[in-house]
Amino acid sequence: MQYATSSDHKVLGFLGRALSLEMTAVQQYATQAKLVSAWGLTEDASKLQKESLEEMGHVERVISRMLALGVAPNASMLRPVKLGTNLRQLLLEDAILERDLVELYSQATRHCAKNGDHDGRKFFEDLLKEEQAHDADLVQWIKILETPKT
Ligand SMILES: [Fe+2]
Ligand SMILES: [Fe+2]
Image (tube, rainbow, N blue to C red):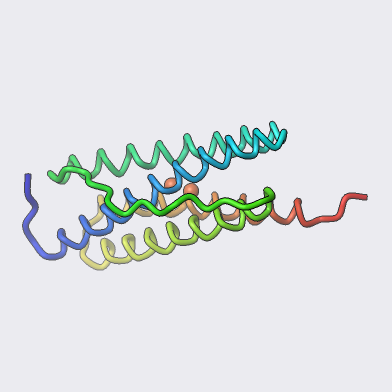
C-alpha cells in the first residue's frame, strides 16, 4: 500500500498526526472519566466517558480515511494522560488538547483547499467543526465551574 505525490504525502502526515492526537484524546478522556467517578462526580464522569466515545469515533474515521488512501494506520506519538487534583484542572488540560486538534485540522483543511483536494478538505473540515464544538463546550463547562455558587 503506497501513495505517491508529495502533496498526498503531506495529507498522510496530517492523518498520522490526527490519529495520534485522537487516540491521545480517547486515552485522556477515558482515564479522567474513571478518576472523576472515583471522586464521586457521577454526572461529570459520564460526560467525560461520552467524550471518550466521540473521540473513538474520530479515531475510526481517521483509520477509514487512511485505509481508503492506501496506508496502514500507525499512531506512534501518544501523549501521556494529563491529570489534576480537581475537575477544573482536568478540563483545562482537555482544552489544550482540543485546541491542538483544531489547529491541526485547520492546517489540513487549508492544505487540501489549496490543492483542490475536495474530498480531503471536506473530511478535515467536518472534524474541525466537531473539535471546535468540543472546545466551546469545554470553555462553557469551565466557566460554570468557576462561577461561585450562591
Ligand atoms: Fe476528536
Ligand atoms: Fe475533541
